[in-house]
Length: 509
Image (cartoon, rainbow, N blue to C red; front, side):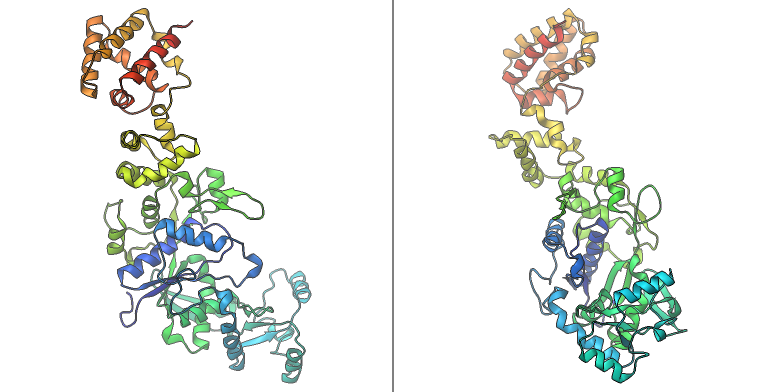
């Protein structure tokens, strides 16, 4: 349960290294829901201390993704806040003093080993790790004299600061999803806390910033569990254990066809996106598609993510944001990984499009038409078309496949569906239908269908034998909404013109 003695403050702390995986967005979502439910704050902090992995444009991309999802932070690099700056690269001066404090108190040490020396160790020992087994024989302040260490520091010899993990000890902590968790310290290596360039590693920076920003609950993926003992020790060694946040290690999102974390490669292999939005690699120019560009509504995307590893204990599947905030609880988050089901993800989007107001999706669909050089001059007509076909759309991009015939005549006909059963009697029927409809004043679906069926009975033809040819005449194939609804929207002139054109195509040998 949340600690009611202090304000709930949660953070999402991504590294700006590329596209935002749907697992990352789910972490944002759970942070956001928890904060909103408990009247707390949601903070965005950019963890860009590893400059070698920094990718230009990635931070803005993260901000754009959160804005599209409607998960806007209360504090962050874009809108500031009382604990600014919110980029770790701009907080560089904060970290060294804490690393030096750890050294002074005997909880960390200077390591002067060169990259070449460490490579030599890795060649000698394939499973080499810097820790209690070997730190007393390596080049660090634990086995150099105080004078030797100071001399190296005075000379500016490159060095890192490593945590000194205790031997034969156990680190315990409570996780709000997993309960009591413990680690044998003999299996934990002496992680680097401060790099030679003065930048902190994730391990030091996340603890210092969580403390300074008064983070109350730390949500992150379970892949960070192995790092937890180092972080717990740092909270203790820095004297902040009473202020340590509650830990929440979220279950992984798994690939749909097996175990293991869902990756971009899985999405490429199985034909679905794993990023929230399109990501363009600034170096290669490669574009990795996202849910937004595939035609997902952000509300559907959020709803789908919420149910990957959480449920409210009922059969309900469609939740508004308000309902998610009201019903979300850590107790209902599963320990087990959640397999991503793309078909289910499509179902969510279909439900949201089907039940959406035309005004809510109109802009996005107009953008799709604009990309195809289709200019809409009659907004009322467009609105009616969208209302007619939206229940047939899984993605917003499906609009063109479902509605292109409303804006241009069919370029070709599915003749295989019509010609084998076409006859002179049907040619005569449709020619007669044209004459009848030309004099019809009530151009509505009920009247058109009544006339259509009455003439079929008069000609001795079953209406069912005429419906498919009529549909193909109007749209080009065996698809689309109710055929008389299509005719109403097309109008009398366009409907008759299409029938006339199709009769010629159907009767040519």
